[in-house]
Length: 136
Image (tube, rainbow, N blue to C red; front, side, top):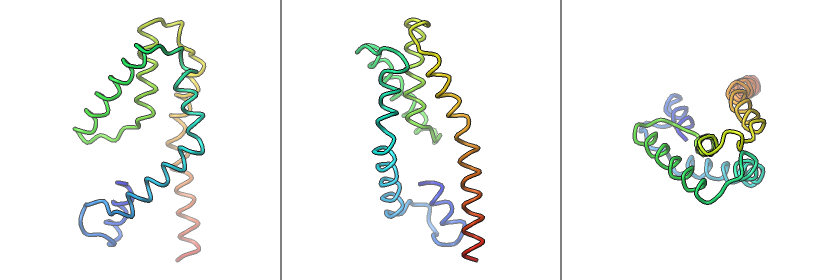
């Protein structure tokens, strides 16, 4: 939402820094569609493919995630809730028993996190180039 609002302000389509309702609704719909399409795989991975989660593990991971997300929000840092929760589960699993963590799954997750940023940037740049080419 922040990036869309920033783009609107930078291009003179908005004067204030409030996030417009249509931006909020669009982002909510995009997140809902993304979750419904790919969410089940994420839930399966986070919920059982990282480690065998017991109730106490889940409580510790959720509580630490809440504290981290609230802290990041308080100091205005954008964090991914999926990354925070996944990392919290890794932390709980590691502190409980290092060999209990499925490190091949953790490695795939980290590699995916690392490549997501440059791939997204390249895709957005290419899309902008095409839109600019055809709409200008």
